[in-house]
Image (cartoon, rainbow over all chains, first blue to last red; front, side):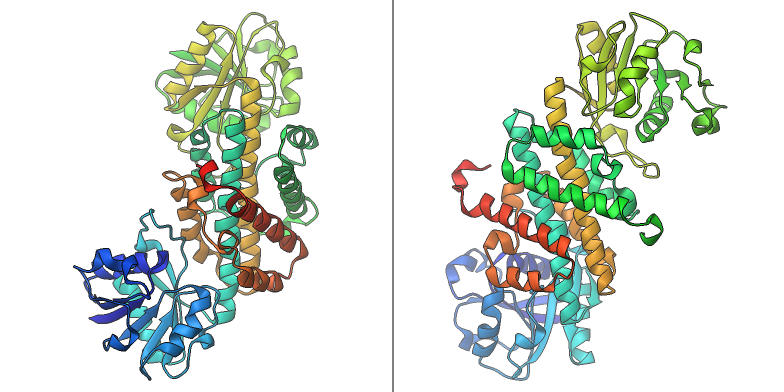
Length: 259
Length: 259
């Protein structure tokens, strides 16, 4: 059994709490947040606190707070030599106060307040100095059904950057698709099977091979008509830049250099 | 039973052939292509031809050829007053030669040569002048398990534009994520669950609500570090433009105007 104290009340903390409390091999000893009201609704399930001096002993303390608060919170912890982990994709492990055993437990997934996440498919990037601490992180990931990946800070930060492209930026393209449909009273729903298939396709083939469409074909006529149809100047700039990017990927490089 | 003659041998034609030949209510009377070799491997299943003068009588002729070839092929057809349909997202219905009954049968999906497509989830955009012809298109869509949507040319062209954003451009962002991972020897596979979840999330919530990440939070520190980490100038330009787009969507507009 791994005892966990959870700190923070954002999307990541809340999703982790739900996953931990469902896992047989994990017990959530306490849930801390600076303002109690955010976690008040869980008071019948778990010991909730807003006073760091009341923190109990546990196998691991998960600091699931905003990037800017991680360093300060780790300094404010009133104990030493215990295992603490932050959950951020972009904060360096050594930003944590070294009076404790520092580590990282970063779930590479997008967490929204109202969307349930199937944790069994979430890769957890873990980092720690000592083998015994890595083992706790690995066991914790396993207990919630996740695969753990040992990733150093510099690689994790690069993954986080790549994640911004495939998640945040992709979602913004969905938003633009939504806006374009709205202007002509077309249901955005009609695009949803295409969106699913686009994501599904690259499970088994590389994005390079999966590409289709006017930019890949260098179909100047269609591109020209599209640019004429786009009324929003911001959308037009994005269309131009991503079309140029696809053309560069597919026309100006030798296919043999690509996978 | 609907009898179909298929014309063309590209990805759309091939996927349509497979869907039609599986459907109980559809019989593929003939498959035409200018060069026989592309469809040679199907000769034991279907009557393959490369001579328009040999076209049999059928309920509908599907012109699944490249956008630029549609008008010419429709002119070259050696018969009149039969139902013909093109399958393009961007070509106007009236580009088809009016000596025949013209229509559109546009499957809104991404078709790659080597990726199987589940047709039951493909929306088919149909267009025709006469009710009786719309019925044939609707029945044909239904026979392969698809939902038909009556969409006029101008709306279909806008849908095709939106599809470029959510499909081709999204796939290019996957490609960039792949490139970023490769530079640091990180497996792209680790991003795949995130890519799936990003697509899945917007099935039940709008892309506006689903957005997360540094641009949405206006997290200047992370954005600045990301820009420092990006080595490729093209990727940097895309990062800047899409970050600005997300900021504009989420900070400079009233949430009450958004869905």
